[in-house]
Every structure is written in C-alpha cells, then in structure tokens.
Image (tube, rainbow over all chains, first blue to last red; front, side, top):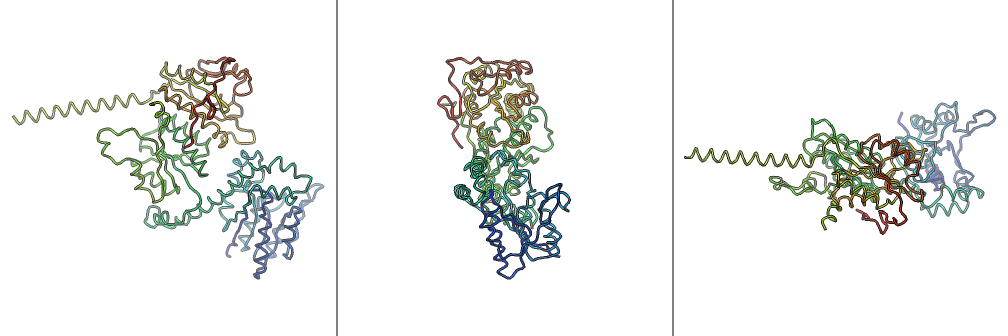
Amino acid sequence: MERGRYKIFLGMAAGVGKTYRMLQEGQAEAAAGRDVVIGYLEPHRREETSAQARGLETLPRRRIPIGDVVVEEMDLPALLARDPELALVDELAHSNAPGLVHGKRFEDIAEALEAGIDVFSTVNVQHLESLNDQVAELTGVRVRETVPDSVLGAADEVVLIDLTPEALIARLRAGKIYPGETIDAALNNFFRIENLAALREVSLRQVAEDVESKRLVHGQDEPLGTRGEERVAADAPRAVGERLLALIRPQPSSQRLVRRAWRSAQRLGTDLDLLWVKPPGKPLAGEQERQVTALRQLASVLGATLLIEEHDDLVAAVARVVRERGSTYIMVGEAKPPRGLARLREPLPQRLMRATPPGVDVRIVAHRGQREGER
Amino acid sequence: MIEHVLVGVALFAGLGGGYLIARSRLRGGRSQRPDAVHQILLPFTGTEISRRAVDAALRLARAEGATLMPAYLAQVPKRLPLECPIPNEATRAMPMLEAIEQRATAQGVPVDARIERGRSYRHALERLLGRETFDRVVVSATATGAAGFSGEDLVWLLRKAPAEVLILRPGPEDRRVLSATGPGGNGAAPV
C-alpha cells in the first residue's frame, strides 16, 4: 500500500492561523471531490475556526476516563476503519492519555500515513526538539510536549503560516486567540513583541533549512565527487539559507576568528561550522589537545559545529566539506607574510576560490588588535 | 681545479642550508607555547569590567611573560541543560572579550579567552578552575555587589583557587570601566 502524503502547517505561536489554514485547504480538497474527515480539531473556542470546519465530517472523539476526569483524544482505530482519503489532525505534538496505543499524536499520524491516508496537521515551532532549548532561552517559556525534528523532515510539504508580531498581538487584543480574561496575562508573558519576533525568525529559518536539507538529499542521488554531484551543487536553485564555514587551528588566535565568524553568522541568520584540517597521523597531545578542548567548548557555547578532518591537502579537504555542508561563506584568518619559497605559492584564499563551487564567498578576517597596536 | 670549486660550492650550500634550517627551527621553537603555560585568569560577568583590573592583569602578564585568560562567566538557568548553546550570553560576552583582547594585543600580551557556563557565577568559575591551570587569578571586588562577585564568592575563591588570587579593592575614584560600547571602553566594531 502506498504511504499517504503528509503536509504540516507550521507556526511561530498559537493564533497565527495554522488550524484555520488547514481547514481551509481541507475544504478546498473536499470541494474538489476528495473524501475528507476531521480526525481531531482543537478550535480553542475560536469562532472563525469553528466556522471554517462546518460542512466537513468530524470523527467522534475517543473518551478516556482517568480517575474522575474524562479526557478526549483522537480515535485512531475509528479513523483507520473509516479510511478517508484525507484526514485533518490538529496539534501533532500532543501527548495522548495513558492507555492508548501510542504515547504521542504524531505516532498516531504515522500509522494513518502507513495505512495510505493523506494527513494535514499543525504544530508550533517551539515543539520541535532541537529548537526547544533555543526557544526556551529566547522566550523564557519551555514547552513539555516536543516532537523529533525528523517528523518535520519526513513531511512531504511544510507550510509556514507567517504573521508579523504586531498583527498577532492585534489579533490577541481583539480576543481572537484567547478569551478576554486571559489576554493581559498573555501579553505580559509569552506574547511580547521581542519573543514573537525571535520565534518568527526561528520559524522562517527552520523552513529554509528544511528546504535546504531536502535539496541536499535530492543532490545525493549520484555519488559524492562525481560531475553530477558538482552540477547539482552548482546549478540547483539556491535555498534561502546561508551557511558559514570558518577555518581554524587549535591555537588561541583562532578564538578571535570564531568570534568574528559567529557574529557574522548571527547577522546572516545562518549556522556556523568550524573546520580544522588536521595533518594525518599525528595524535593530539599537550597544548594542542588543550586548545582543541577549548574550541570544542566554545563551539558548544555558540551552538556551532566543530569539524576535524584528517587530510594532508587543506584546500581539497575544505572543498569537500563545503560541498557536503552546503557552505556559502568561508572565513579564514589573516596569514603571516610568506617567507622563502612560500612567496611563490598562490595565496590560500585564491586556491580556495578555485577549488570550491561557484558562488561560495571567501572572507579574510583581519587582525584588528594588531593593527591598532601598530599605530 | 673544478673539483675544488665543486667541493667549495657543496660546502657553501651545506653550511647555508644548515643555517637556514637552524634559524627556522629556532623561530618555530619561539612561537610554540611550552607545555607549562603561565596563565593569569581574569574572570568577569556582565557587560563591563573594571579597567583597573584589566590593566593590573595585563601588567602582571607582561612582567611574567604569561598568557592572559579573560573568562566570561555565564549563568545557565536550571530549566536548560548546562551544556546547551547560550547565544544571548555569547552576544554579551563577545564584544567584551574583543575589547580585552585588543587592549592586550596592543601591549604585546598573548590572550587565550574563554566563555564558561555554570548554574551560578561561582559554579562557572569552579568548572573553569577544574579544567585549566593558572598561576594567578585577578578579580575586581565591586563596591555595590550588584554585578560580578559577592564577598562570599571572593572568600570562596581565596579558599579554593589553586593559584595566587589578586583581589582589587574598589575605590571611589575608580569609575573607569572597560566595556564594549561605553566611553571608557575599547569598543569592538561589528565585522
């Protein structure tokens, strides 16, 4: 049986209109003659959302008694038995009540997809596992219900529901997201402009990275290093995301390069990779080992990735990493003036420019402190 | 006759080559740091540091041929894993480390900076002391105690640090600070 198609509507926060858009597309599919049912809907007492669901068949919820309370969940067996062409399932990060087959709703969805049912679903960006810490640091709010990033990666389509922070706050003030008595608390806590702006940026980047990773996966149809692979890397339409690669060595002066590279990465809104091309066959020891540990710590603090490649040809190793990681910028430190025969050799930036795919920028980071000291 | 000339050329080439190899090794040896590195730790928190503390640490480092290790101590809230990335804290630390490094470089003092995480400033300092070895620690006591190390932290440091601890007493005249953007600072321009 062919697996169903999976479409996820991703938002930066509650109230941006994920569920509304999912229902809107569900209505359009139904109007086109497809068999559409609502597997689970959480309208949050929002009138616009409930109105959008009218006319679509809704499966009854499964009622699970837990002590004195009855919890309502999506009825997966009923959905599988009903076997529609398309199911609309809200809030994929939801944790199911104990006793159900799966602990999480995204696992229910996976089973429906395996049964050949197409699924539309919704999620907020802070529920993604890899972003949970970052969002918690940005907003001070940590969500408990998380989903693995692979869930988003496995979707056939991810639709970002984007709204400016100002527009979202206006919706909140108008009572379109939460009931009147909770609006002030929401405005003072999670729904602050700076929180929403940060979350919006995270959401946009997440979708850009998703596009980029899917592009790279398609590029791996042919073995690495073949002309075909190079053609894919060079000619494929560029995704929104940039990726920065800083060439370092295990020495204190590299920390300056890392700092500059990280600040550039922050401004570009991109990820940072740090690469040390280590001469082969020499084990780490003494001061070098200490410096590698320090660089590893710094990379961890900054959320950068430290790569150590053993290779005797620096330029070839860099070119390979650039292709594999999809780097768009390479940053190198200012070299000492060459001596002796080294003067005859082509400078590193030029060699890198020739060896890497077209469109990759090479930047030399100047030693500002030294220049000021020389004045 | 030709043999004598060839021997002479070979001798000259051998001596010249030997001299060049010896010189390059000497240079390489000078630029390599010895295994027992003399290090002076300058821990700080927040977005400014007493310029008196920086200058004192630099004077000591220059006199002793030591490396200065400015270390930004970052508090990681309990709700986050201790080893998680802390971009907001790093954003605060970067300009400060850059400013200290520029000041040190201008005075010919080598720098090896760090950002250390902990549940508290003291915990971050404890982790750093456990990971690195130092000859001296230079800290600035603040008059207000609002930023930086408290009196209790300093007592703890005196008791625990396996190095000489130099605590700079706050003076009413000491208002100069090194900050990323302040007037007393040596601000680091964006890349």
